[in-house]
Image 1 (cartoon, rainbow, N blue to C red):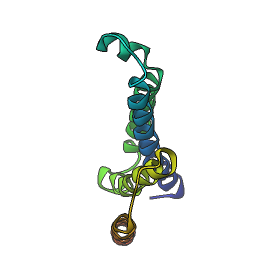
Image 2 (spheres, one colour):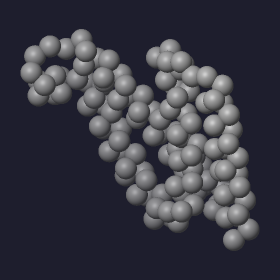
Image 3 (spheres, rainbow, N blue to C red):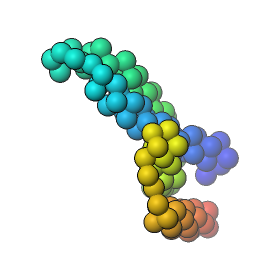
Length: 121
């Protein structure tokens, strides 16, 4: 992969945790709303924003896949998966322990192994 493709895959890996964070904001906001579920859904602006974000990231993903093999691009999702608990801890004060750090370190090690293998062809 060239540097532009790597940057786009990394950006996508960050975009997904942002979407998950928006969905959590939507869930918290939903608790403040009243009325029937359909009304709460259409008046939940964080939820609408989350759906919009995922729509944009889906288009971005499509563009990435026009340039990069799926197996190479999807490997970057490992990076984003570990960011979700970090964001939950930083923003929502959700607890994470040492096992998260160890697990994420293993994930990053796996990412590096995969990327080195792909670089060698």
